Amino acid sequence: MAVGILLVGGLGTRLMPLTKYTPKPMLTVAGLPVTEHQLAMARNAGITTVVLATSYLSDLFTPYFGDGSKWGMKLLYAVEKSPLGTGGAIANAAQLLDTHESIVVINGDVLSSHNLGEQIRQHEANKADLTLHLTTVADARAYGCVPSDSQGRVIAFLEKMDKPVANTINAGCYLFNPKVVQSIPLNTVISVERESFPQLISDAAQVFSYIDNSYWLDIGTPQALLKGSRDLVSGIADAPALEMADVAHHDQHCLIMATARVDASAVIDQGSCIGAGATIAPQAHVRGSIIESGAVVGKGAIISDSFVAAGAEVAENAQISAAFVTKSEILTI
Ligand code: GTP
Image (cartoon, rainbow, N blue to C red):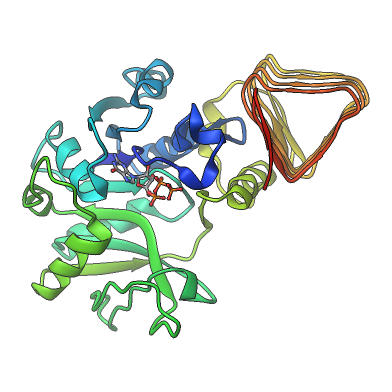
């Protein structure tokens, strides 16, 4: 069986100001932190021990996730004093793990319905050093591309380019042979994408692709964060974490977490979610938006395609569209 590392230490600059006080993986989509959705996905694949590799705002994970027993998992925490990059974070976190098992590494900002259990199976059957989940996109110019041969061997790990040689891209979920992780130097800033992966390929290591085109989304930009939440609510993306969560109401149009107070005359639709303890006043209309825990939406307010952060307040009759609303500011996105 495999053990896991979740990379959750990045700065999340593209989601400022939401990430000023909340690390990106703790932002909620469909009522729960991104990390909680990822842990449920890992658990469904049989992974019960996971290290959260934290750095930026590291203190905010433990009060919520604790030792993981609430989810039937064992969670450990590795903290980098300053961010070590994806490779340095993996090396640092792996010190807390049993060194004999395959290590699954998941980027902390990805929603994926891919078959992780099958990725693990293929990795072990191939006796691979590294198995990368790849997904197919129509246009790979915005990403680096990762071509592989007919045997599934990765032949290059390429940066963004105008004319990509393949339409398969890195989907941010990696299976490592633990020996490969042990070869990454400790206490050193390293990027697996820019340094370790290209090096392994040029060293002719056993690097395989696992191509799976199930639902996949990097939620690192404002529009993607909102889309990810809507997709989880509407059922386009798998949401196993919701099965264990305290949910008051869920259909394909809206999700309302337990303890939220939603007036009967309010309309919540287009895949919106209302977090625990949030208040939605009479005649308010919330469309395609995320209202985080404890936020208040005033009477008659109309909110479209927006993110209202935990504890923020929207005034009566306000009209907010495509914006981030925090306790202290509103930013059009
Ligand atoms: P942006 O600043 O908006 O690009 O976001 P980011 O900081 O999250 O960077 P990026 O999207 O490239 O990171 C991909 C994943 O790796 C995210 O889940 C990050 O949390 C994580 N990550 C990036 N750098 C580090 C690091 O130095 N340490 C740890 N522990 N995680 C990291």
